[in-house]
Length: 122
Image (tube, rainbow, N blue to C red; front, top):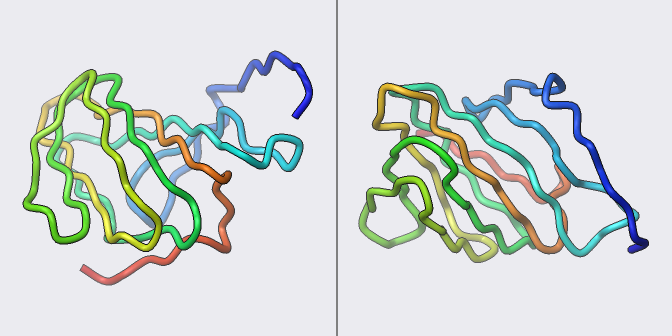
C-alpha cells in the first residue's frame, strides 16, 4: 500500500442480489489487506443469507437499527455505534428494523472479491 487519499463517488451506489445498496469506498489490488464499503439496507428489508470464504468482515453501524444473524448465534439487535464481527465461512444476514435506511460500513480483511462471496436461498 502507498500513501493516498481517496474521495469515493457516493453516486456510484449499486444494488445487489443480496438486497442491499453498495458504495465501494476502498477496494483495490493496491491495498489488498482491507476493503471498505458503505452498505445501505432499505426499511423492512432482510438481506440474503451469504458468507465470505476468506475475509474477516466487520460491520460498523452508522445509522438506523437492525437485527443481525451470524452463524449459530441468536439474532441480535444492533444500532448506531454497534460493531459486528464475522469470521470467514460464517453465514450472515441483517434486517433493517427501523423506518429509516440502515447504513453501515462493511470492512473486510483481506479485501473483498466477488470470488469469496457465496449466497444462499432463504
